[in-house]
Image 1 (tube, rainbow, N blue to C red):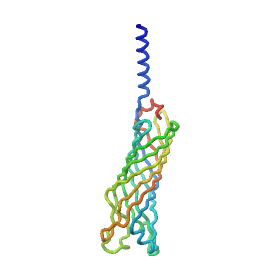
Image 2 (cartoon, one colour; image 1 turned 180 degrees about the vertical axis):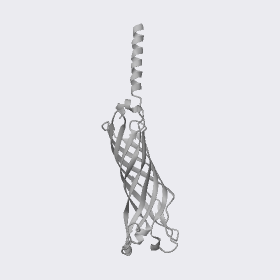
Image 3 (cartoon, rainbow, N blue to C red; image 1 turned 45 degrees about the vertical axis):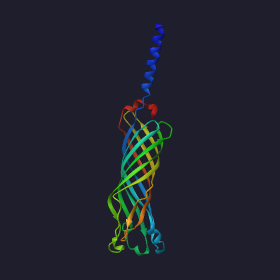
Image 4 (cartoon, rainbow, N blue to C red; image 1 turned 60 degrees about the horizontal axis):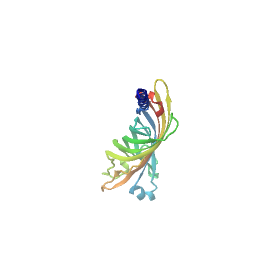
Length: 235
């Protein structure tokens, strides 16, 4: 009987020890990203001016900032970013042929803080494919860029100081594992589902609104916690 007790104790100890080896320890990464964006607008002004040879084109701009991600479990991750980006439109007309491209813009510079939850598809240990979605807060850091001489006196062109947009995208990345640290390189595509109105004329009616933005970025992140080196089965 004593031998049975000892054997049982050894089995329980071995099971607990194995369970400790498989304790989930989240990985946390911090890094930088940068790339290009393409934003568009829609609204009553575009429809009203279609017959006046004024063409509103999607606006292409750059974006850059910081990104922090941490694992929630083996399948989900939380990501928070702080990035600078521009949204708006570029317009053209025969009346403005003498003006340069910077003059023919209605754009706003924002600091954007997206908070996203991503699902990591089960692939090889060092390859990631993530589907993510969340909310992006946008804080206007610079007023709308436009040419006031093209409008009647008193025309008001403005942007909301704060707007919130649903956002979603996909990410493909590769982790380089070394004895010193894990470096993560990624390509990310994301779309903001914007709907806030941002252009106003003298009568108080809004004529343009943000219709959305696509962003393609590249980035690199370094892992900030070391404990996960012992948990290779969760990579």
